[in-house]
Amino acid sequence: MLRNNNHPTIVTIEKVMDETPTVRTLVFSDEIMSNVLPGQFAMVWIPGINELPMSVMISQDSGKAAFTVRKHGPASTGLFNVKVGQQIGVRGPYGNSFDIKQGRLLLVGGGTGLVPMMRLLTCVKSTDDVTLLIGAKSKDEVFFEDLAKNLLKNNPHRVIVSTDDGSYGEKGFVTDLVEKLVSENHYDGVYVCGPETMMFKTLQSAHSQGLFVQASLERMMKCGVGICGSCCIGEDLVCRDGTVFDGQHLSQNKEFGYFHRNKAGILENY
Image (cartoon, rainbow, N blue to C red; front, side, top):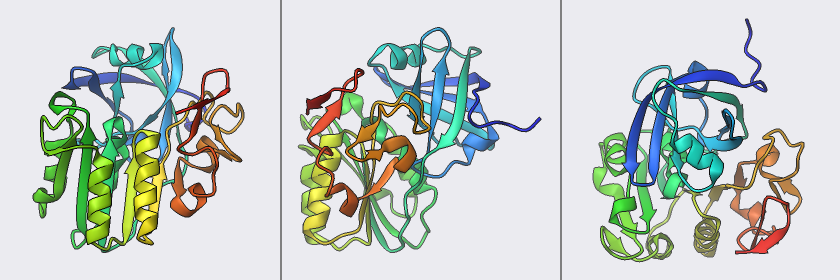
């Protein structure tokens, strides 16, 4: 029977890994999801609770994929609490993907925004000079550092962690590190995913140096297929036109970095 990507496929959670006290990775078998492009996402149904959009995390095992979730609201907490052997629904993949340049690349991930960065690391060439910046509030919220170093085994020292409170790695906001690096080096591509204010500042720094930059946006999303309009940002729908947007395009968007929409679709300041 052919799979309809717009209908939920029921999968069973096979492994749960605690990344931090508030972040878990749930692994399941799904050949299609295991091969999504960096930047694409799935809509995930937690039975009896809700459905939410999730970037698709890589797995070290063939034919498997994963979701890395931070417990926050009812849906994300529900997914966080799913145990091995329980089932969830997955539909998609949806969205576009990063345009991967060659040469010197700078990847920036904050929180669960690291998920598409991990998949992007599996797509770069061994000859590329790649630096990954990991931003977190504190040491106990740092994750994927060892995985990233393994993926960048030719240049593991190019994985740089920055914590807001200085409890691990570089002290300060990851955007301060971005500003420093782009002023000292030329990058053929800059890629970012994480909190919108972090992405906004990263784009500003990259633009100031005339660099190619793309961001994978995270917005309220109810349908994933461009019908409900809940993920609109200006004239764009993140699910239909993204999630990956070019920096030049975003620089013309009057909402990006300044406003977000609540569950009722009302604009609120960041």
